[in-house]
Each structure stands twice: as C-alpha cells, then as structure tokens.
Amino acid sequence: MTSLSAAPGTATEGAATAPHAEWARPGGDLRALVAGGAAYGAASVDGACGVVARHGSQVVDLAALARATRRDLVDILAAPSLNRLLAAGRRTWQDVDAWVASAIATGAADRFCHHADEVRMLLPVDVADYVDFYASEDHATNAGKIFRPNADPLLPNWKHLPVCYHGRAGTVVVSGTPIVRPCGQRKAPRAPAPVFGPTERLDVEVELGFVVGLGSQLGDRVAARAWRDHVFGVVVVNDWSARDIQAWESAPLGPMLGKSFATSISAWVTPLDALSAAWLDPPRRDVALLDYLADPPEPSALDIRLELVVNGEVISRPRFAGMYWTAAQQLAHLTANGASLRTGDLYASGTISGPTPGERGCLLELTWGGEQPLALAENRALSYLDDGDEVVIRASAPGPAGSVVTLGEVAGSIEPARW
Ligand code: MN
Image 1 (tube, rainbow, N blue to C red):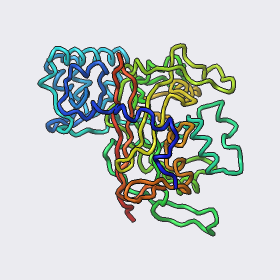
Image 2 (tube, rainbow, N blue to C red):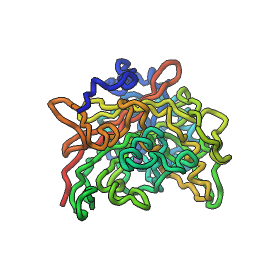
Image 3 (spheres, rainbow, N blue to C red):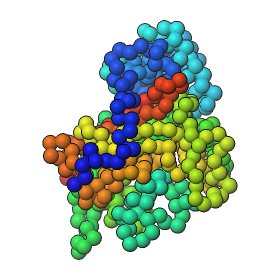
Image 4 (cartoon, rainbow, N blue to C red):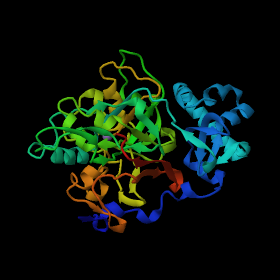
C-alpha cells in the first residue's frame, strides 16, 4: 500500500499557500477580487435563468444588470447558457468583461449580487461536440505500461499528432450532479467469457476543457495561431471512466461506454483573457512537427495547478504546464481535415499527469491499475471509487500582480448502480 505522506517532494509543494482561500471567503470585497477577472456561468436566480459572473464568493446576475445598464446585451445574457455570449465572438467577450469590471468597481453591480449559496448553477454551456485528447506524455506512458505491459507504452503516432476520441456531448453534466455507477460488459483477462454488471473499476480523470465560442466554416482549417479567436475559456473536467468496461471494449476503435455515461465540468468558465499572467512556453518536443501543428508565436501553454480530492483528502496535485500538446495545437488538429467548429464545442486535454506519483491525474495511475491502493483516513484503502465517494477537482493559476485566479471546481459523488 502506498502512503500518501510518502509522495515525492514536488507533489506537496504549494500545499501551504491555500490557493483556494478566496473562493471560500464569505461575503468578500468585490472590488478587491476584480483584479483576477470574472468567471462566467449560467444560473437560476430567483427562478429566472441567466448568465452570471463570479468574483470571489459573489455572483453577479448579468441579465438583470444588463436590463438596468446595457439593454443591448440583454439578448445574449438573459439565456439559460453561455452559448449566445460565446457565439458573439471575442470583441463582445472583451466588451462584457470590461463592463462587468466597471460595474463592480463603481458599485453599479452591487444590487445585482447574490451570495454563491443563493443561486443554483446550471450546465454553463449547451455542449455541441465533445472531444477528449490524450496530451500528457506521463499519462500516456503510464496508461500504456498498465494496459499493454509487453509493448512500447507510446504508440508510433503519439508524438506526431494529438491523439483524441469523440466523446458523448449529451452526457456532459455540471459540477454537483450525482454520478450513477455505470453497468457494462467486462471480461477479466483470464475469464472464459464476459459478464454484465456494475463497473468494479470506476475512476476519475483530472482534466481541463476548452470551450469554443466562435465556430468555423465546413471545409476551412483553423490555424493554431488563430485559436484565441475561437476559444472562449476553460472549464475543469472530470472524465469519469469505467476501466474494466473500457479495457474490454476499446480494441480496435477506442473508448466508448466506459466513458460516455457522464463527464462532469465546472459550473464556471474562466475566460482565457482572465489567464493573462499564466501563459508559458510549451515544452520541448522530441520530434519535428508538421507545419500545421507549429506552436503559435505567443506562449500557448498554461500554468494551471490542480488538486484531486477524494472524500476531503488531496490525493494528487497535477500540473497542466507540462502537457506535451497545447490547446492551440489541438484546435488546429481538430479542424485539419476541414471539420467545422460549432459554438459550444468542448475539447478536453486528456488526463493531466506529471512525472512523479503525486502528480498523477487518475486512480489507474495512482494505484497502478488497482494493485497499489492509496491509504486514506479511517483505514480506507482506495483503489477505485466506492458508492458514496465524493470527488472534487480544484484548479488555480497565477493572476496579475501576485494574485491567484481560482477556476471553478468540479465535484461529483457516486451513487449505486441501477440494475
Ligand atoms: Mn480523458
């Protein structure tokens, strides 16, 4: 059994800085928090659905604020999702950002503020297509060793193109939605025949997801350098995975029912414009890339740190900065064949894992295929998730002038299988 306290050094760095403190601060001074930029979501406020912005623990009802101060924005903000705002394009996103910041700074937003506990958050985006990548070299290597122990862990295409599969958009759910343990077909390696029943290997995947605002024309390619014109912002993603179902079904066409039962995203979308202090150069690549995958001139990797929390215990601290493929390259790859983008498309990074055990982003890796359970409190040996377990993924990034941008968390609890 692996002790959590024995996790290597880098896994615990930053633990004492409490990067999420301002998220939990009751009340909070809106004007002090505006420097980090707003995050956006959709909520039911006093029975009406609309777009909301969050600064600290305060939620601003933007539909109501628009009715009072910007009638021209009512159409895109009095809506049950962010999609109309997303479709309006980058100049409108920046216009709304500036308007919200000004309304907070002047106090004009005060009477449209609610405490986070008073509003019911909705799925922020009406998801069009959902694609999941596989962009962490450490994750791909570890998963390859576990699933194919007698072969090269990385398949020959991995360093030439950002590998991905098409997921199920209709089962993307907002943080807090209970996750019913999926049933499916599975077959243990030495079992004579498959069986059907609840998964025995329910896992999480710590990921970030990128939300497409502006679509593109069928037949056109979107260049990596143009990605900021199309991508509005980032959500935190938990790509729930049933490893036994996945292992048996995936050859030769990839994951399907082992993933499609649910994918959770944060209620809050953090605009890329709010991450201005978090950009980094991407890592060095080992092989020459084809031109369409060349990195854009401005930095396109993101310094975002995540925490995977099970039943209140932090079990991993993955870092997004080291991902081999960037969101810019992934968008260029998704459209390389002329496939069009639609408003509301969501593409996720793939499991975020780093080189040390304390930075691994799923239980498959953290417990090495279930063989090395983690020791949790109350003598719990965690290999895969039990009914009743609660999983939370938190994320934060450096903000302007030493501040911290806290991305919305994604949470979910496991309910028993229905069968
Ligand atoms: Mn995934």
